[in-house]
Length: 125
Image (cartoon, rainbow, N blue to C red; front, side, top):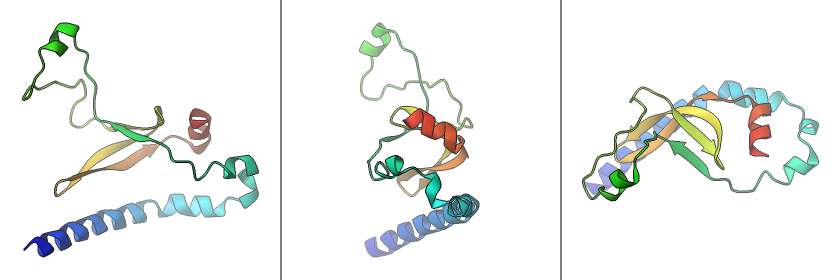
């Protein structure tokens, strides 16, 4: 039973990743068409540096009093609606918008809009 559940979960993630791969084929083709010389040698040295990717589901503003009254079971209402795309940030800088994907008991994010490559590099650097 547990093995079957694991296989189903793996199949669902494989399907989600396949959809992602198909959606990004155009973008990948664009990257392949770029000349290798366009990426400077200085930038190449940084390609293996790990970066923190953050998905911001929503925000809320609370007073100190409201914050002190929070406890287990408390609900904090976020300012965004369910339909609003989430922000995807790298090291605190906005690089894309996405939508939350749920497969079994796992969260993911599907990128639906991405900032232009030049703008992303400016924001990350």
